[in-house]
Amino acid sequence: MDQLLDFAGKATIVYFGIFFIFYLSDKRRIFNGVLLTFGLFLILGDLTILALNTQNSFWLLAGIGIFLFTLFLFPIGSLILGAVLLMRSPQLWAKEGVSVQHSLSLIFGLAFLLGWFVIPMGLSHSQSLPWILNLAFLAGAVLYLYLIFTFVCYLVSSWLFKLNRPRLNQDFLIILGCKVTAQGLTPLLKQRCDRALAFYRRQEAKKARFFRGRKKELILIPSGGQGPDEPRAEAEVMKEYLLEQGVPEARIRVENQSVNTYENMVFSKKIMDSMKKNYKCLFCTSDYHVFRAGLLSRKAGIRRCSGIGSRTVAYFSYNAFIREYVAAMVMHKKFHLIVAGILCLPWISLALLLLTALILRLL
Image (cartoon, rainbow, N blue to C red):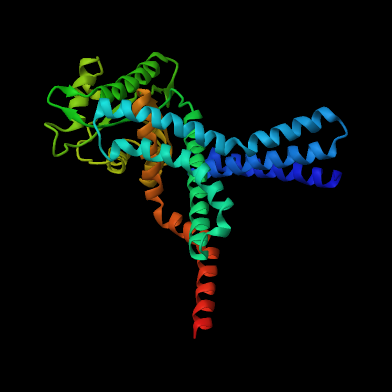
């Protein structure tokens, strides 16, 4: 047992060394969250081995307690999250209107709540179900657990990315746009601009920051084109607001051609590349959108890019975060479809074998 404990401890150290290499090399990866999630289970295994190896009853009970807590963490956490999402849905509908887009929190809330009841009930009655329904149910249960796992990994990855605190030595700050009206900035977009301005002023106040003998001047890049239901380009409206707040026009570069976050990053990168080499940049968006925007900045080829987020009201942010999760899954849909196929392959293969045997028997 001592040798097993020693091996488990060394394996955990090596594993987390690999995790930190990936995390520090680029924080804009969902894989970082996958590694950390598996790492927590690895620590759980180490604690279990330690508890079984000890003669101290206190540590034995503590190890069992931690094991049971972690074992029930997923279902209990899912139930709590599901309840919160369901409670927030009516408030979101009252404020923003009823639509499929605004019903994601309701759909996921029901899924998180019902899944942990339906799966045990189905397993307990599996013998009374027809074999084809039984196999279909088992495949569905596996896919449900995969959904929970990917959501947790995305949540952990988002949290890891937000842990980063950008230093006050940036060259560019991209402000990601969203809908504008005839009256100007919407509250959501104003919050983004104000968050960017707060960072801009903090860096300006840091008088000791120099680069090659000159003070680093932060360039703001309001980014966003004109949508079909918008009177003007989002970037132009943001620029006017920034000027009103005292930002010199020479410190603003407008990007007014993009129609989505990926294009925000691609077109802003062209502006930054044309102005400077080996620059440092960050982007500003709403808090729920920070991580996926980071993924898209990586996809756009921006090498060093951090993100900061403005706060969003709770009733809106829950639904919006789920929308971001769905969009991130769609970004890697081929991968997830392959994984889903592999997970369902045993049940599909078994169903085909049973079906073939049934046909041969009838013949």
